[in-house]
Image (cartoon, rainbow, N blue to C red):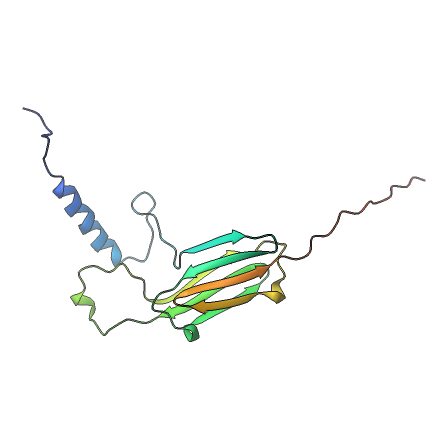
Length: 146
């Protein structure tokens, strides 16, 4: 008798995955090999000839709940995302949308003019413009001897 039959459902594995997800929701840790941690917010960074452009999707976040800081070559995005409605914890059957206070730090390329950064927030998308610093031309250093 074959162990696997064509058309046989793997529902027990799906049930196990859902149960593990439910149990791990209460633990604020990432377990390597079980689930990859998802950093919030998801970001994209691309380069243009004169700048680096960072975009982050922040649905249900108000501009006054966002804070951007830069220090020592590190850009920090932080904010707070409020609950949409007052729903008690015991009523949830699945929670995948992050809420509460969050923070994300990113190293900034050395060639960025930190004092020229600008940020725009429209329709739930944060756009940070990081202008490149002028590239210094290499200079010849004369070598002398005694």
